[in-house]
Image 1 (cartoon, one colour):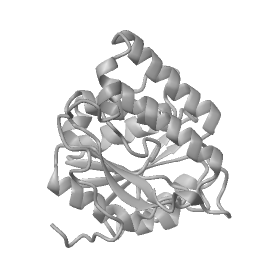
Image 2 (cartoon, one colour):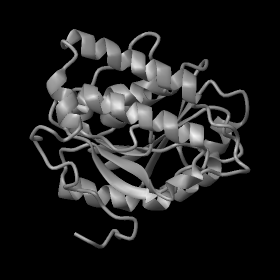
Image 3 (cartoon, one colour):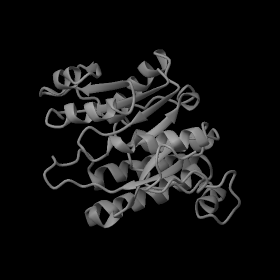
Length: 260
């Protein structure tokens, strides 16, 4: 199982089967972590061909990611691609992440919503911008779309990564992984994808003010431990030299799987 797709899901019966089916056309192995859903999410994911891991109760996205990542590594995955179950990501963009992974196999790849960003609600764009600033500072590296859950994690990094801390098992864990990646030299890089916000979709589980405040709390604690990390701030603003070029593996929206 060279690459596995991991989909954390909570009450996503309306969309999960389609997302699993589309993802399976890109990779052989799809893992769904059902995070205590009260609907038919698990049954529909399994019927669509996913390996389903069930949480007894709702523990948060970070907890689901951690469990799925451990399972994928145990099964021999060389990389894990995460995407959301609600239809906000195109599984057809998975080849772009694979291209970037081949170019720079040691780096975490973020599918960054850089095209048509005006489609996102204003409050969401503001919250994401705030999160980008703070997480980039803590990482000491300029990061794009830190709140995108569509990512490729190399197995080498996941073997070093720490699990979510108590009280931080939700969306904040994805920010923690970006910071951890930068600090161990697995500098996150961006692949440009289209911004999708579906009017008919269910409300996002991400709560801009609540979850962004938790991210800022995480980052503030990290910065205080490092004496506010002034060099990290300057690097995140590109005012000091960086270890690697942040645009090195940026793949444009029109790039295809066949490009080297």
